[in-house]
Length: 123
Image (cartoon, rainbow, N blue to C red; front, side, top):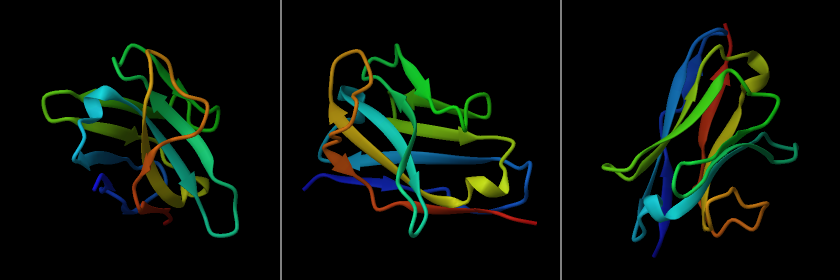
């Protein structure tokens, strides 16, 4: 059974940084487009970043552009979300998701999802 696992969440002060790795069992993330999403209870899920399967394309939501960076370590088959200059409004549960796709980022319909890792930005 395919499982995606996020980690690296926690409590951080405003202006701080966190790195969230996304790993998978039974599949190689190197073959998949991977997206990061976030959602708080009672709020809609927000897609915040995506990396294409060949890492040739990365996309970011305006809310995180310039502060977050998505990347791959193909040797380790891990996708990272580096989050810098964190703000209280970044407090959410962060999910990674994967889909077999071409050299672009898919517009929804992700196939596999993780269970999320919570991020709290507070002083």
